[in-house]
Length: 347
Image (cartoon, rainbow, N blue to C red; front, side):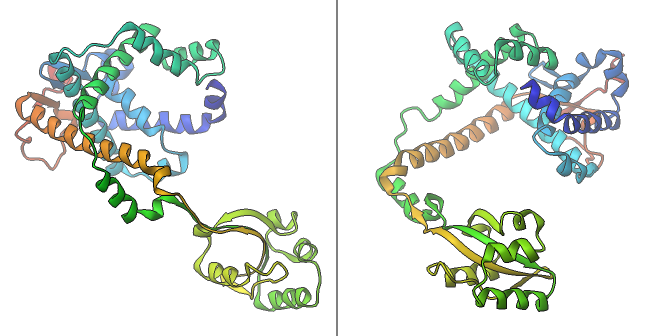
């Protein structure tokens, strides 16, 4: 894990810079720098505080899911949206955790140990696991408490669909209506020659028609350096990844190992393809995917029931959000969410 972190250090630095910039934008940068952000309240859920520190950490975790190219394309509105989405997720999680506690849902020490062992198994060694915790500034005790909380919420949401059975006809109907989800598209092992003009492509095609070896011609004239070194070999390509004009030409010659396509023009370049091997589309039988469909449908029901439960919990809960996080265009807060004083007002 630490090797992966070091390997992606440039992305991590971008995330840190972006997250810090957004922190400043929301007006509590001075609290972070002074170490008081852990006490500054971003929101309260039935008198339980979600601090700006909590929000900042969760926001960084969310941003870490995006690569540097995607992050560079985000504007201020997108960061606003993602930050508010992060806060809403924290609020929802707190509501579910409070509900789990009210229902006296328990998690044993053994269950926590099992989950901890599962996490450790994703690291090369115990040392790297400990190094990662140190890097994230998380103690083992904190991690265990976090796992306890997550498992309590998971047990709560799992209980919402306890005893529910998905009828066989519903599973079969889903399979029949979504067969494309259970099939592997045709696969082609292709070689290509790429040329910058129609004239040069016609010359190469003539050489192939006269019997010259495709790989030799590709190495000599192909404009695509990476595949040219391999005699034009592109490796295996899914039919779904092929441009429509190339797909049609390739399908015409796929059963003839000696044939090559006509010239395919795309994006001001000219392509000639040869099919080295191909595999037809494969569809998984109903019995192979039956259990997966059942799990998917149960998950859908669980999500719906969880949304309904959250709507009920929000209706009867008192949720307050810091004025620093209120949208500027909002003249008044929504009925179930009221603002809390900003950190400066709490001094």
